[in-house]
Image (cartoon, rainbow, N blue to C red; front, side):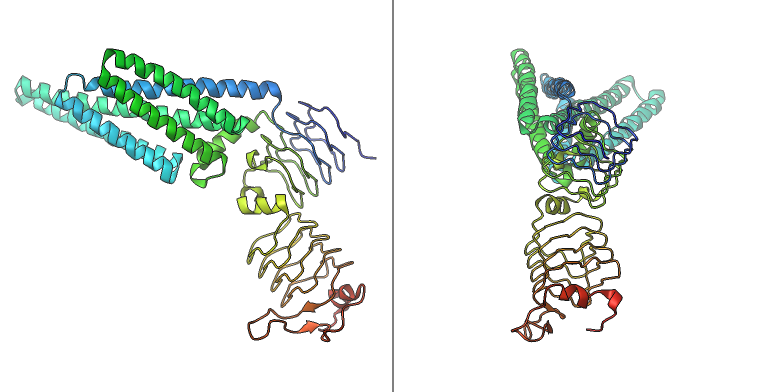
Length: 452
């Protein structure tokens, strides 16, 4: 008899490598529990609460706040540096500030349009070119030292200094942008939008204090510090919120944040969760990386978007939504790969599944009324108790391992409808007749080899 952990207090408990087939974890608290490598076939996690233990949640929020404070400091110091370069109105210094602001502007635009990873790549390229330019000018200075007047050499050396200073300025300011965006995203993953607001506020407070201090020394320096800080903070809020809501352009920030928080949350890495049930479970900060998720039930699971899913099918946002809601009515899913998933009792009325692959999936008691199943692959698919009344099944690919027991069907169409013939090849052919109870399953059982 399987063990029963129903309503159990299992925070931080280790189940690594254990065979827990069919075990009941429903309504239990499994925050911080470690199931790495466990066999959890048909395990029941309905209404379970997974994620971080409170001490780790607090520690990570504090870490994010500290990181935000540092990033606010860096952004303000970087802005102040640019401002102070303008104090003496030297032409070289103006060039430095202009180049730095242009690079920073392009960096910000790249984050918004293409994400943090592309922006970092741009920053690396910009710094590399600046470094190469500095080396080139240094070579010119070395050559000029032998045959040019000392004053000319000094001018060339000053140009080298300008280029190096520009590179340092860009690195400091842009690093502040990267850090603040990352820290806000980390906190956001831990505690949602509230933490994003808090961390951005902390960064803003630190940056504002630095900007005010710089303004007391020089108004221009303080103004540029404030300008850069505000831009960085707004950018971080934008990137963090978009990362939270699954924007692919911000996937780097999101993946790094999720990797950090799930390390201390509930761990299902490398588990076998075949036919496991997570109905209405809370799965924030939970890791399913490299887990076997064959026919796992995710109906009404909470915060699954804040779990680490690696390269499993849960990485597909649209598919994940369908698995959580089980509402496929009127959806166009032509050609979709829906293998090894659980859509038991799903609403699939009027959906189009032409050429879709439903092999080895659980569709028990699902409602396929009027659905288009033309050329749909149904090898090992469980359709027991499903409703197929009015469905179109032209060239559907059922096998001897397709489960059709107790299918509910009054009538079926053997061809896909056209404008000229909206109800083609109806069975039974007489519109006044319907299938008798169990007749559909007998008629379409491949083992009987009945030619339709």
